[in-house]
Every structure is written in C-alpha cells, then in structure tokens.
Image 1 (cartoon, rainbow, N blue to C red):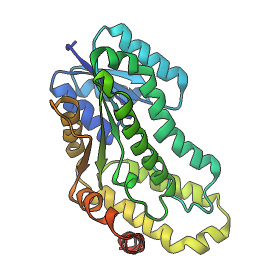
Image 2: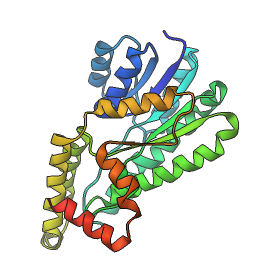
Image 3: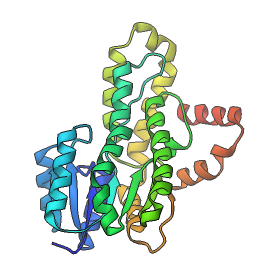
Image 4: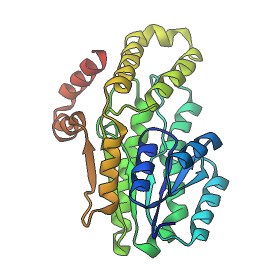
Length: 279
C-alpha cells in the first residue's frame, strides 16, 4: 500500500475510472466506490493500488462502511473525489417528482453524505475535496432542468465547503467539464425514454422538438466529447498542486461558456442555448 489514499466515488466508468487509474499510476492507493462487484473486479485487474468499495452514495449503510474501511486501513486520506452522478433529461413541467428527487439525492445529497463521513479523516491529514460539477452548474438549458438544478446546488455546496473548511487547511475545488465522452449520456438517454413513456401524451406533443434536441445533444456529447482522461488531469492537479485552483473549466466549450456565455444578458443567452441544443 502507498503512503496516502484518495476516495473516488462513481469509479466504475468514465471520469471516475480514468481518475482512479491515473492516481493508481502515481502509486496512490485508490478507494474506488463502485456499485457492482463486476466493476470492482475490473478495476482491480486494471490497477496495482486499487481497493474497491461497494458504494451507492444514496445508501447510508454503504457510506458508513466505506468510511470505516478507509479509517481501518491506516492509510492517510489525502483526498475525496465526489464524482458519482446521474443525468435526468425531461421537461420540468412533466417530470415525476420522485425522478427529480432522485436526481438531487444522487448528485447533491449523496455528495454531502460521503463528504461528512470522511471529513474527520481529511481534517487529520489536511486533505482535499474535489467535486465534479459541470458547465451545467454554471448555465442552464432546456430538457436538463433536473441535472442543472443538481449541479448548480453542487457548485454552491463546493463554495460553502471551501470557506467553512479553510481554517483546517482543507482545500476544496470544483471541476467544471464541458462535453466529455462518458457513458452518463447514453444512460441518461435510456432513462429519459423510460421517464417520457410514463408521461401523459401531451408531454411529447408539447415538447417534441426539445426532446429530440436533447437526444441529439446527448449523442454528440458521447461521440465528440473530450476523453475522460482530460478531466482526470484536472482532478490530479487539484489533489496534488501546491496551490490548487478553486475551479477548473475543462474543454474549450466549458471555457467559452464559463468565461463568456454565462455573462451575456439573460435573453440573449437563452436564445444561444436553444439554438445550440437544436443543432
């Protein structure tokens, strides 16, 4: 085992897996949160310093067990990467409240629950917290209202934690990626189909164009997005740099939106977002 460790949630695929393997390559022990034993086995086979943990961030018992396992390992916890997340795509007028609630449970409440469980370990090591937010936490568009709501909330939570934990030397950073080629978009599309099937017929009649645009946008993100390793590079910097940034925009689209588009007048920005989603 290495002299330090990092907990990465949502490590089965995409950004979480890329981050786990990048840390592993640096000789850092990675406590990799996954939901399925098969994903745990795949990570162990791919790395040298990976300790898989069955961890659904909405299950209190699994969160507590993960924190105990890390504490009992005796390895100082240098970082937490809150990466687990889902994307619910549906018009706010018709999305089931339970589906909206689940989006927030995974992307916001679950992140806080995990953070609370390991904060004593991070305080002891003056460790770091890295929250994977999104440009979707800086600017909103149609059909992804639940996702945007969760990422805006995670941005706010990140800022508050950064201020509240500063006196203990705990650095807190937000990673704000643009389009990244990860399975989250295929999963979101499949879940969206299920949610839309449960909606009344007028939902598809009223929002047919928006739903089609959202599906096309998800396909583009999966096909044309940056590799998740680019995000992992930013996460590594946030965990290891002497002076980490408070936020990292990853990708040219994220930088354009984060530095320019989000500061435009509201109605102009709205038109741009609708046009972007429809192409």
